[in-house]
Image (tube, rainbow, N blue to C red; front, side, top):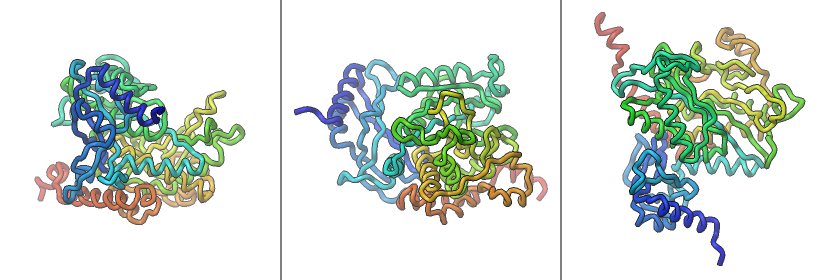
Length: 447
């Protein structure tokens, strides 16, 4: 009897584990807040894990809002097997991402991977596949106890005195590629000690796994060199924050559904409706794309981050940018959504983005004219006349919009939607109760 695709995948993992002297296998999953979680098994347990999964305490998936312990099953995805190149070669360590199941084998509705899979299935039912390519920014600091940069370099700086993180980036790229994650670019970014590594576009589920791996690799490399890497959206008050600018497109088979030769920006009607969906629903999905209190310190005018729901061809402060078209590269026509930051949960973020864009296509939203001037310099009346609204200024504002959002509820599913809101309310309440350094320096000497 011929082996099924699943059988072949499992046999491949068992063979690769043996050939690479793998002793430990880390089973990874992502909690609702986007934190990488997991536990390790030995090679003796690998075959059973591939067949029936491994039981664990599922309350770890719930973030801050943990309830009573609940048994769940981590079911490894064989296609994600990869040896961790920063671990010893003898008695090596590998990883696999897992789907989180209930003990009866059904999908757990609070599993981030399941949320994205469900959104991708809806896109597939409409005839679309969703490809993404994020530009991931992060900072290097001298330690985890203070935000002291390694350098004072700027955009694309190359000299060793200005780009102290060049070797860190180099090692990170090499490790990512050893794990089968292709990289397009890496460079110093605008802010002091800020860096960017761009991952080559692929399907959204593979990319969400890659984003989680990327963040781990960046931190592992930094730690091995005695420095600290941070994906905090806005660690330095007077510098640009870190974004996760997501390049994206929809395809129908081999055809780029966003491309139309005779249209402005080469964008098809499908692409323009997708843009309209993103512009309309961006404020209500902000608590997913920008899920931390600190995220909203980045989304202010003057630091190359979006603050309003506008789009344009070249302006890097708009919410959506359309990269320039190169003749003969129809497949590269795409849009760049600049709202998310690199501290988000990529599974939930990609699901929310896709659902908002598809809503524009399904309901035939009218295309929105691109902005021809700096939106931040417009008056409120001028922005209102063009249908441009503000993104939320705080997490509290974002949650108020999310609580009224049917699009976000649809994107996440009821369980994850309610769990996320509960988690984020806990965060807002904790922040409200905290006494900050600003308050101490501003008020303590005078009051």
